[in-house]
Image (cartoon, rainbow, N blue to C red; front, side, top):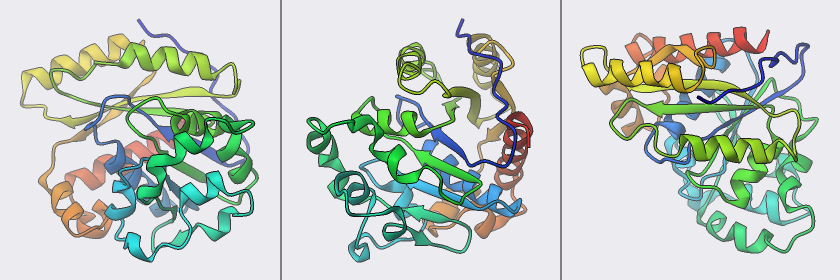
Length: 265
């Protein structure tokens, strides 16, 4: 059973940096980063998304043409002279630091850099956002380490399917190791994605999720299967832009509110 510290309330009005992490791909990590950012914006929060996945799906998913990007997250991490504001693209719902294919070589560029695990932290600390949400790659790389060192919290999406828990304990070990570099890092919790209450396996996996994360670290809100999510992705819109009355929009709004309560707003 995975156990984490119970004291996650940082209080006040300080910026909260949250990394969405799972070392298993295809768990709706990018979709959740996008739609949680939108939900928090709907709640009146100033939100910055950071696309730290070399696939750049978050960047594409919010409708950004990568060929028109001047500076991206790669430049922010690699070039000492590039500042955060030079990489930000402002959209209707939130701001985003986009990614391009250049990010694929970031690890090899950073490997011999001094304090390479602090590159992101040094660029984003003391910025004027309520929330920074980081979409991490589905593997343990220097990019992932940078995200975790810069973060206050880890948020773990877990897809309700047969192999949902592959890599969870490896992720636990990763987080424990990073806490040596970032003592303020805490697990905010795990939440279920692609949940279908009609299917027995979904129900069983949710029970297993609760057992694995010691109950209180699992969000009550479940992100249900909803075809509206796929349609919104085709339109490169958040679920709130595409259909704010959908089940998925309600789920993501409920999750955003639960996150706010859990952090202590």
